[in-house]
Length: 311
Image (cartoon, rainbow, N blue to C red; front, side, top):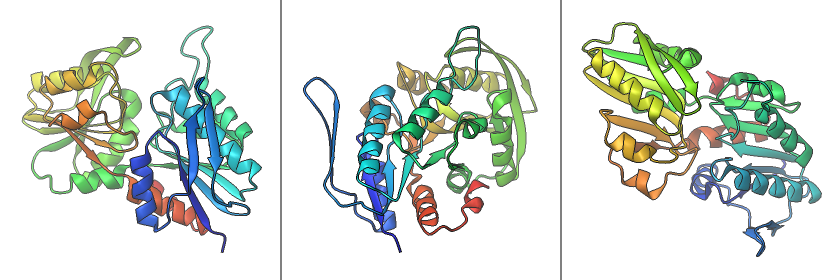
C-alpha cells in the first residue's frame, strides 16, 4: 500500500499536528520559510516519490501569503514525483467572491481553483464552502465536508425550546440540516446587505419568542451580521442566543464586538487558528475538526467511500 506523507504549511500547524496524531502519521520534515525579500522558500526533507501526499494549509489570513505558500509546497511535491497531492484546506479563501456581484468584478474563487490545478493539486479536501457550487470550478475531485457531526455533538444535550436560525436566505440549507440533526424547528433572518461586511436585519421568519436560538453559519468575519442578528432575535423575544460558525475569520474589531454583545456563546472550529485576543474571549469556544479531516484523509488514501462524511 502506498504510504501517506503529511505536510503542513505555516497557516495552521496546530491543526496539522492534531491530524497527525489522529492518523498516527508523523508530519513530514520540510523547510517552509521566507527569503529576505519575502519570497516563500520550500525544501522537502523526506522522499515522497510514488506516495500519497496530504498538505494541511487553510488559505486564511494573510490569505495571499498562505495561498502562495500552499502552491509552492504543492509544486515541490509535484517535482519530487508524489503519486497524488491532496490539499487539505479546511478554509478556502476567496470563496465569498464566487460570482459577478456587480459589473467589472472578478470571480476569484474560480481563479484560485485554476491556480491550484496548475500548481499540481490532484484533489481538494475542504470544509463548509461559502457556496457548494464552487466545487464546479474545479476539474479535479473536491471532497466538501460539513461540520454538522462536530457541531451537533457539541450541542447534543440541548433540551427544551431550541430553534436553529439561519442568518440569511443563503444559509437555509445548512441551518435546515442542523435543525433536522437536533430535531428542532427553523427560523430565518431576512436581511439586506448594502455594502460588504455591513447588513441591515429586516425581518425574522419563524417564532423565536422564549426560545434558545442557535445561529448556524459558515463564516464570521467582522461580526456585524452576527451581532445584528442576535439583537433582532432578542428584540423578538428569544430567551438566549448562541452561534455555531465554522470559520472564525474574526477580522478587525470582531472579537471586541462579540465580547460586548448579547450573544451568550460563539462556537467555532479550528479550521482557522484563533488570535490571542480571541482565545482570551470567554464567549468564544473552539472545537476541533481534526477527527473529521483525519477520517477523510484515511478514506481517500485507502480509496474508500467518504460519502457518509458528507451527510
